[in-house]
Image 1 (cartoon, rainbow, N blue to C red):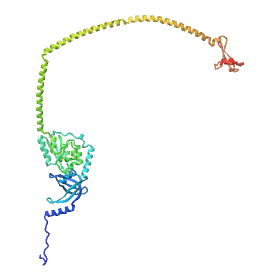
Image 2 (image 1 turned 180 degrees about the vertical axis):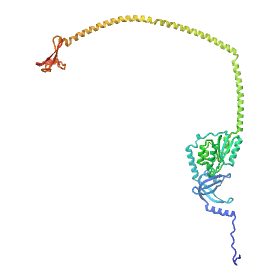
Image 3 (image 1 turned 120 degrees about the horizontal axis):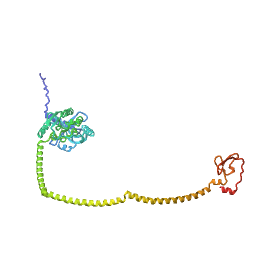
Image 4 (image 1 turned 90 degrees about the vertical axis):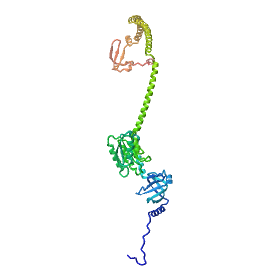
Length: 464
């Protein structure tokens, strides 16, 4: 193709090198974000030996994340604030790190912005399980220290199972039964639960170790799953949680029957060190032998001292016999004295009893009774005479006052039909029946006439 006269072909722009492009992007990004404040949730935090801190800032509302770095001085000032799950507000600038062509935010200052959403949810779940008693010490089972068969739940390939096997075989002859499972990522919690179900069906298993190496909080989220925590709480076998490093504490660490900072430490907890046990046994054996020898020496010396104190047995027997003879003679003398005293007492009581013999008592009582009988007869006759005299006197007085005596002198008593005595003629009526009582017998008559006399004042007063 020919080029028209007077014109030159267009040239392509000079291409940029990758380093030049990185510098252009870096200048553009830093210029646009210098001094910016960014809010997010800290995730995947790692502290480097140099003192720098690398982490990610996650948006809590949208699916967005950016890498961040806090260099040593800034990291030292914000060490207490930069933790996994913390919600923070950071000041700094975005930049492009040329060696990797990676966009990152360089943090210069940090201030708290509240707890992260994941951290808040985890804390709520922790409080819920704590209230239900899943972390209570009294529900934890005793972890054996000399397990013969150990179940391990971890990744099939990796340092965890290798470390456990190495420690277990070095310390003793325990059998290791691996139930492989995913230990991070989607489906990890379900995989661990299924592995626990398989191990729990195995007969003769002594303990289960749930192991995983260290990692970020995102890597360890499977071990904060509520289903897994409840499955560990319901496990019939003791469970040792060996998840993460010493600074990492997951919910499985709290619910498990024991916690180990590393899988190797978990193996040391459940597998007894046979060499150490042999050494301890040998040490105990040596101490026992020394103690037995010392005891024998002491017993022999004590036996010699006792034999010296004991002396000749024949002399001791003769002395005891002499003592018995002396006691026997003293006892006989005491018995004789006691019998003599009792005999005197019996004689005295016999004399007292003879004086109280029934015949003697009856004769004496009969004599006293006769005297009392005579006295009683005399007293009775005297009393009768006195009462007869009094009675005669009172009889005479009573007879003198008797109405019959009056009637005997010729008087009579007139009574009405109702039995009332007539004392006044005015109390009767003509034709009325009147009874008349005489000294002997009575008469019945009818009133034919009344003769009523006036009563003299003196008689009235006398009647009154």
